[in-house]
Amino acid sequence: MSAAKDTNGVLAVLIVGAGFSGVAMAIRCQQQGIGPISVIEKGPGIGGTWRENTYPGAACDVPSHLYSLSFAPKADWSRLYAKQLEIEDYLRGVAEQYGLMPLIRFGTTLRRAVWDEAGALWRAETDRGEILARAIVSGAGGLHHPSMPDIPGRTDFAGASFHTAAWDHSADLKGRRVGIVGTGASAIQVVPELAGHAGHLTVFQRTPPWIMPKNDRAIPEERKARYARFPVLRLLERWRLFWRLEFPALVGFTRVSKVTAQAEGMAKHNLRKAVPDKVLREKLTPQYRFGCKRVLLSDEYYPALQRDDVTLETGSIARIVPDGVEMADGTKHGLDALVFATGFDVLGGSLRTEVVGREGRRLAEAWADGMQAFQGITVAGFPNYFILLGPNTGIGHNSIIAMIEIQVDHVIGCLKALAEGRQAIEVSEPAQVRFVERIRNRMKESIWQAGGCRSWYLDNQGRNTTLWPDSVLAYRRSARRARMSDYRLR
Ligand code: NAP
Image (cartoon, rainbow, N blue to C red; front, side, top):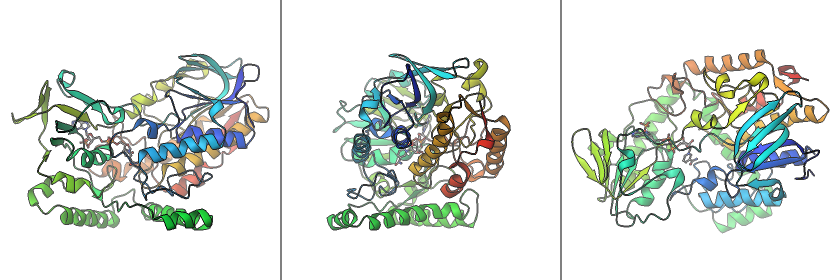
């Protein structure tokens, strides 16, 4: 087992982030005898996105028996879709079970990483000093730098005002007039919790999401006991869930097709059943194709919007004033508190840490024409540097943990080459160019670019540099094994 103690002051691997990616990476390094390793984590605990997003109603929209590490099963998930705290507890339990805690330096933020060509190592500058490592694996994730909207007067608001990913639990919203901007995955989980708790809730919608029923429910005790007693049953359930979610990808969900129209029919049926009022229904009907933005799951959002103490506002916001929000048509919503469920700064966030590769090349320069990486993991010019959940490896249809585990396998393949005595491993430029071309060609006609919407999936040139445009199985085939012919070894 690798120790936290460095050899000659140089780690074999420095892992950044103690969320699902960092934890999975650290465990696999240990299992493969790759060390010494260390994990740095900016926050005070394990969990990543599941430690940071503590907004009321935060839960996963992928079933828990699938949204968990393949090698660390949990028989007693309480619900079909676990809530934030249970997932955070699960991941902390896994880290403890695998003895990771002594390897993690909490409260340590990576500020800059510079490749030292002569020493064939990375100099990682953190707010707690320098760390030297042969390789860096970034498990920092893409969805954690809140994106605050550019609405005039935003900072003038006098009441409590915060982003869903930085929920202010000290703010007392009970009985108050609360506004929430945004109707994405975070908002549709918060809105049902705030409705009835706030005195009045105003939901500011710019674009309605497509919503399907979630059918969430508690998992009965007998089922939990059965899964504990017969692990094969839990495994079968995991496989069933995987194939159910993978199915749309296998029938070509990335393009506008007959399947798109069928899905739209089902979502509209769900809306008709849930919302009898024609005017409200019209406001909630998307004018873009199903799947262009992330499809959301909820049983509670539409009912919440129909409460007397909830208003759905679909006009454009003109400005935020100290005591509310003024609309372009001159009307005003008086508010005591304002919540921003406005998503994340994906590109800006990923470049917040300065990464300087060979010949002083910065990752920000390498990505000036859009984020890109071979298999979403490695970038030419940046030896021994690996990104988990990097460009074009996000998915909306299945468990992202499956993608993380495939990437961890790929990185392990590269790290083994280093462990066998090589100094540096770097993806070849042609391999990266071929991969990126393949992705860009697939994206051209994809639903995300041709589906008539704008989402965080797209960069400022309208290109999708965030999602993997195929099934998880296709990614597994493409990325799981690191082929040395795609890499330059020194
Ligand atoms: P999001 O999907 O990016 O949604 C942001 C919302 O804010 C959108 O409705 C957007 O409207 C609105 N908005 C942004 N700027 C605005 C402005 N200036 N004026 C008015 N409205 C504005 O963010 P999110 O809901 O936090 O979700 C982000 C991602 O996190 C998800 O796609 C998902 O991958 C992940 N997530 C997952 C779960 C889960 O259960 N697994 C839960 C939460 C989040 P437009 O649509 O018009 O842009």
